[in-house]
Length: 277
Length: 296
Image (tube, rainbow over all chains, first blue to last red; front, side):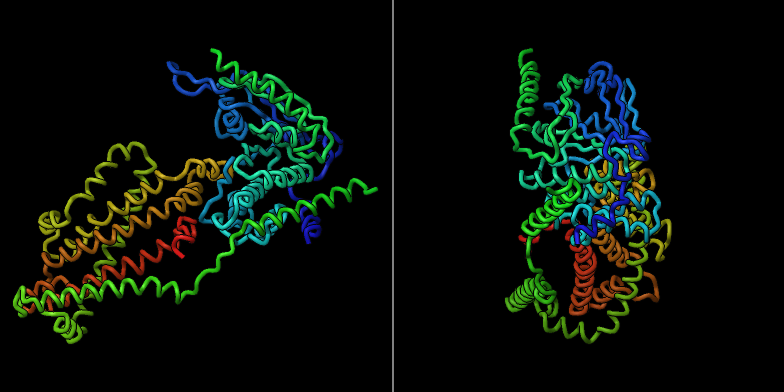
């Protein structure tokens, strides 16, 4: 049943293309490219400026999976808000080719709607016809393996299931760029591991660009093609690590642990710097 | 020797199986009790409370605290109620008609006012505290002005009913909108809800529980104002509950007076409990605001 469901959904999102290959894939059209150039974000007034981001430069290639890690105060959420278009940078350029959608740390489902209606809402706001919407919702829920729970309300679902509904809702927007703000931070380790597999599969099948923010270094290494380390207060890129571990990866594999340890050491050095001043 | 493709497929199947297992473990299995059982669990405490009240009333009458022609016992009052049932129903019809008119008008005015004050900063600064202030104004104090403006007409009563109920309704909507989690608003924007669509798809449904609470409170104010109005603004030829109450006092019929009071109380409670209570509980259950384990 699941294989059949999967065959049906092959037209969700962009066509399947290995990243970097030619043809009509996202890499060829450039859709899904994210360019963040010399971006600064300052909150507050001139007398009391709070600098959240400082001349941050970061690119994500179409179909890439970029993980951003940093300690508290590195402006991770600010960064995603800027890319999602919820906020404007004080200086610099944020350029997203195609459409970006944002998944929050909390599922942010609307409690007055069933799982299916939550997924349907952005399609409705996009002006899709009802029959087309219903068919897409079925596909999307099947994709996150929740078709049996379509009529449940958010409070009747577990935390992991809610986050999957949120994922289906985000994917329904036919976005080219999926921004994820610590989406699995509040889940238990077992659920999180399975959802890592799930996100990885959907990312590959849909050819999305993912910008994934987390404070969990191992999670970043488990998922990313590249891990970007941010400094805190203000946030700027202090190091980038390509992750050359073959997929599928396991979060508890020695290769993941080794790279995670290297990154964690740098992160700790960065945190320590703030205690000294 | 699996090819990469079959490898990917078996991996997908494995993920699905794992998710199905996690979901099965995490979904709570709590059978919902039957409708009859739920209704009964709601009804019997109320029946008991009414029984205790009537018993207490009978004891006071027996104690001889007041002579029985002034304070009749339950039996006498209920037999009067049944004897005059037709008249009382007719009177209640008039009163309920006015209630529907006034409350309906209050819903329209209160909702528009609340939505505007909640969303427009200048209006909030100008009228926000005034609306709360209006709520503290005893509705009976409006009547002299209402009678001057509208004479002894239905209009005078409606005027006061609307003034009594609309501020509560507006306040309910305002507090509902004020307490929307900012995350929902951001999620709405990410999903493409802006302006009017944001209002329709995010803000209004999110504010609904508080709005219904405001309606419920507004009803209580409307019902009180209405009865006060009917006692003061006697319109010739129209028999209403307020008019019956006044009539029973003037013609010295204590059993009828208490019977009318019972009708007024019962209508007020029924509307509050059956209409607003049911709607409120249904919404709270839908929104997941009720701890089912605690109320089961």
